[in-house]
Length: 427
Image (cartoon, rainbow, N blue to C red; front, side):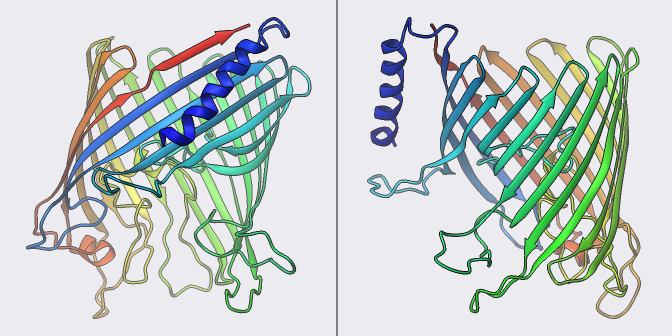
């Protein structure tokens, strides 16, 4: 990795100094991130069966980012190596390295811009479009984004057209393994003033369900639209979210699905805060003419539906998607500027009743999860985080997610995030 990266960045830095004095207000910075995370999994992602052994590993993100900006132009190129400790050999001639960001942003006027290339899409609370920073690699899209922004208003149009290879003829079939959609058009508007903000989003998503052998395209379009509201009077913070989906699944089934979320939190004093909330995502029974399970698409699911990632970060089983009702409460304690502790309780239920393999209707309750997390800023640019979670499931959890609810399910992790800016120049 050093052989490939260092000449590129060294050449760029040298070029910056060579250009010194030719242009005004050029800025260049280089930042580095090293983020190892050790995990103990004894029922994370999917519940475990009795007798299954726990898993342990250390994953790592090594990221090198270069930012450049001047009047009417900004650019970013960021490369990373991600993987598990021990995954690569000591002598590696085929090291894995990829560009997670590579974009340019042109300001046509102080308010209008166009940004194109590989970039993260982070909107509102990251319910539909999120950066997924918890994941070792993160989430990134290849898009053109055109926008208008002033003090109170933001309007973004996002356009994407994806293909799996350069084609000679035809080429409308989009094979798996790349971006999960063929076409995407998204329009997002945000109004913000004082203690209130409101966003609306409309997304038209073209998903390819063609045939790989015949290279036949069969694009189906799914529409998602809704709103996100923030209201923060004094020590209170209220959030509301609603989205509706229509259109077609890849299997050409009509869609009618929705989700809603409400959250209220209160800053008790400078050290203590507490909150409650509810998330509802509609489910499907496999017996209706329309598909009614809501798909949160490309959001940061780890942020919402429990830290153990049972829901939407991983799939349901037995051919059902019963949706989810998540009732939760949390309390946070900040004894100093460098230390924060939080505890969250989730009570999960399915949104749509399901029957087991014998035809017996199951109860809606899925179980409860407790999530504890600690964040400690050790020094500038160095942060230590850790957490521990337990899940107390039910028979219904066994049916829709697998595992044995009588078995102990827990998960622990600790992560060190080192992310300094190592170079900065302005000329």
